[in-house]
Each structure stands twice: as structure tokens, then as C-alpha cells.
Length: 395
Image (cartoon, rainbow, N blue to C red; front, side, top):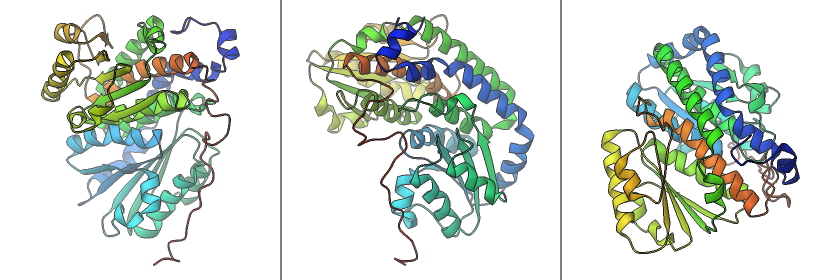
């Protein structure tokens, strides 16, 4: 049984069977993605290691929407680990203002995340990097071997690495779920191959925790249908990228019927806190880093003392007595023991399952079909209506 306690027939009737299956398959496809990296480790290392020896190398993660947020989660971790200029820019930013994001004179690795690889901006960012950067290397991480981006990458061959995700991650549902988490995981693994055995053990641990989360449900379906009109997602550092992604998932799957916003823990006080009313749920993705967590806890204490009937859901790597005393709802990725969860960027893999369970339940609770939350076609699984303008015509 799934965390929503609904049969396949009922999920089909409510238009959510594809999204539900893609949410629930994630721990398994994470292990598939890990195996793929392990099998290709020599090829990947041969491509990446010489690049890391280059002076002034820039590593740019890019994608649109959910795919961009994968880069937002990875970049802070790799910036610290590699001591390099590791950045995350959306393809939508690169395409619309390329000279503000691409530096022609600096060697650059452009890492493109793309579920379908057919979004115009994915192709646009790839081509602009080729046009503008004198020494550019492309890594394409995609779920669709037949997509335009995968084909373009294969044609270029030189200075290009294409990594295909497990076939099941090319989601049939509207919203990106297993595609997002597998691309995120692959992006984390490939730049740290020297520690692949330790990271592999961590992935297996997170996958095990993920299976328990999906089995238990943790009361999230009930919480999702409690009548909240607004949901706020908060995270610090790499977990701000997760907050942005989980915010988007609720917006997408509910067809905008629940207003959702994302902010950093510290930034929330500076105006965005105005959104909180008595029909608001605040979701806090708590850091596993002891320094960062101090600031998370400061805000949680503030919420505890604030007036109002809003509710706070605090999500942590492991049980925490103070968190339990301060928050209205508390969830832990590992209910049994604290353990070691590595960086917050890996922790985001497990955390995202809590949001997926919540978002799907909220969608159905609002009478929306999760697989097709926007039947009017004004928003599509693959973006339409984008015109790519020629750079030469304007410079």
C-alpha cells in the first residue's frame, strides 16, 4: 500500500496513478542511478578530473524550473568541497541575458539537467555556451535519450559527456519527481568520485530511510487536507534550493489552488513573513550542519512564541527533543537513530519525499488530477511558446 492508503484503481480514478508511482519508485531508482555512476565511473572521471585541474574553471549547473533547483541544491556543497567557482543559473536566465551569466574568457563546464531535453531553453543555453565561451565543456544529465538535448550532445561528442538516467525517471506525470531526485543524485556523485564508496553507502542508507517514509506516510495525507490555504517552505544554504523545489511541487500539483512560497530561514523575517495567517502551514527543512542549524532553531523558537493559529511542520534528519517541543508537527528521516547523513545536499534526497507525499495528497484534496493539474494547457509538461532570438541580430 502507498502512503495515501489508496488502491491503484482509486488513484487512477483521481488522475494520480502516474505521479504516485513515480513518487514511490524513488528509493529504487536512486539505487539504479548510483549503479549507473559506479559502472561508468572510469569514463566520468576521465572526463571531469582533467577539467578540475584547470585554473579559473567555472562549473555552472543549469536547468529550468525543477531542473534548476537541482543545481541550487548541489552548488553550495560543491563550492565548499572543491574550493571552486561552482554556480547555479537557470537556463531561462542564461537564454534571456547570456552576457550576464557566461564569461567568454574563463574555462567553463556547463552541467545541464533536463527531464525531456526538449525545452527550448535547454537547447538555447547549450548553444549559447558554445557560441560565447571560448573553452566550454558540456555535461548533459537527462532522462530522455531521444530528447533534443541528448541528440545534440551526442552530435557534439568532443568535450561533451552525456549521462542518461534510469528509463523510469522520464516521468509520465506532469510534475518532476523521480526525474528531479535522480538527476540531483547524479550531479552530486560525479564530482566526488574519489569518495564514491562512502557516498554509495550513504545513498543506500537514504534509500532505506526513504522506503520507510513511503511506507509510513507519517500523517502527511491528513495534514495536506487540513484546510491550509498557504504553505511556506523554508531552508538554509543548500536546503533553500529544496525549499524552492518543494514550493513549486505544491503549486504545480494543486494547480495553484494552494499559495506556496519559498524563502531562506533568515530571509523570511525581512518581509516575506507577512504572508503568514491562520490558514498557513510553515514547513521547515532543518539543516544537519550544527552551525547552520543554530539559525534554523532561532526561527523555530520565534514561531513558537508568535501569536496566531498558523502551524509549523519541522523536518529533521533525526529525532530532536527541542524541535518536538517547539513545532506543531515533527518528522524525522530516521526515527531510530541520529546516524550520519552527510551534507544537506544529500539529505535533500530524503526530505523531498515528505513534500511529494504532502503535495499529491493536497492535489487530490483540492479535487485536482495530479497527473494533469492544468488541463487548460496554459502550463505544460514541456514548455511551449518560447522563441529563441538570435544573438547575432542584437550584437
